[in-house]
Image 1 (cartoon, rainbow, N blue to C red):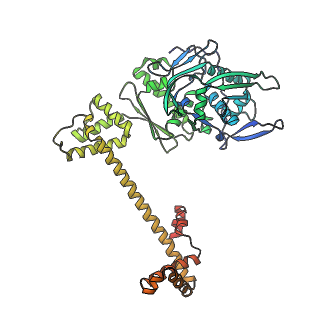
Image 2 (image 1 turned 120 degrees about the vertical axis):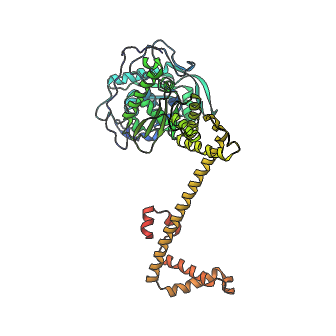
Image 3 (image 1 turned 90 degrees about the vertical axis):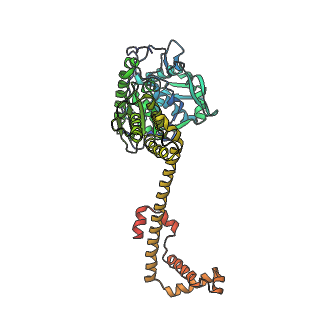
Amino acid sequence: MGKQASATEDYIEPEILPQEDDLVVFVETEGKEGQLQLLHVDDFAFDEMNLVEIPFCTLQKQTSVSRSISLSPTGDEYLECVGSKHPLPTSLAEPTVLGLLWLTKNKNGFKSPKVTFALRDLVESYMYPGRFSQYRASGKLMTSVERELHRIASTRLHSRRWYDRSLEKHVEIDAAIIDSITIRHEGGKHRSRVLEIVWGNKIFQSVQNQYTKNFDVKTWLQISQPLDRRLFRWLDRQLDTKNSQMVKSCQNWAKHKMLMQCYKIEKGGRTASGYILNKVTDSLKRLNGLDFGVRLVVDKSQPDFSFRFDRIADKSVEVLDWDETGELVFEFKKIFHEVKKRGRLKESDRRVAAAWIESYGFDKAVWMVGRCRVLHLEGKRSDETIYSFKGLEFYETRAEADYERMKDNEAGQLDLVLEKEQREKWAGYRERKLAEAERTLDIASLRNQARARAQAAYPEAFTRGFAKDRLIDAELRKLELEELGAMTEDQFSALSESEKMRLST
């Protein structure tokens, strides 16, 4: 990985202004000149998931002398400049590509890979909506964005991890994000510069096949640092449908997912891991306060640290320095060998324990270790000693099944408790309304009506005299509730818990 060049073509991010709760974009409409139409950003903002998993630009604001960047430890996946005129894309490429995705979605719904637009419209309405209401985007920023578009078009992405949703598998690609750029109008003092771009076939097909996800554009527009942006997009993707994401090697992740470049990272060992941890921690601190809840759990037991990112309900950021694999192995030693001091732990035990944590999560893995002890004592091998964590594999499947059964039972018991509480609240409401009926209604007249209704519905009961009085009483209670306009049980169940409590007591 080459060293970075000095700043030759730097760009300046527009100032981040306070964002309103309801973000809007201003775009020109056909018809009366100067007419503006309000468009809600969330109507067309999205992220393409391959472009989250496979980075397509550096994290630097300056241009790089490197002609390629590795995207995998083996080096067989990489970004590469195909011409000599334009270097690799800078960090400006990330908001540029996202803005262009949103612009295309809004203009043609991605029905065509070709889209024509005013450069100022891309910058002011899609890349930085809401920031240029008082002034226009600078010429320097406009030039930087156009230059970035050419860099993106001149860069090819070589990867084996491009997910093709139509084939439902990862495929190997050699492709460009942008296939071509045409200058439709040069622009001038009173005329916008107009470009026509054609999306690369792979990215166009992926968006058409909806390998995309909703995107929190409000938070995105408040982030300015390149690493923060990339980390936010990656975490937003990983924690969208699951609670945790494990990173076994922080160094591979930093170099090939985040594209972090620094001589300290190239040195490897604890120096590299410590540097990466500091940078990621600083980035998470900057994301704190943006309604973004995540916990980073760091395992420093190996020189190449492992990270685990957890989604948390509290909209804040936490960083915990904890040797989870060591704690799980120590739990095994305490339960199976009554060890009281941690001491040195075998690497073979750590590897198996790490696999358990990745598969089950830490809390479930701890429970399963305890359950394995019970199963061992109850089984035919109770007189044998289990010396290593790997020895738990004999009981692993049964322990996991027992855990799931225990959780199902807990959920079932909770459902029964809630169901009982709902019945009690409904009964309380019903009794209150029946007591009111006794005070305010002509019960004798209603009883005659109840007798007639019961006899019409259950003639055999009246012929034989079987349960006749109970049927009449049941119909009478129904009539009393109807006369008072009381809610049905279904209507009562739809109320909020506070309303149910108020009406039932």
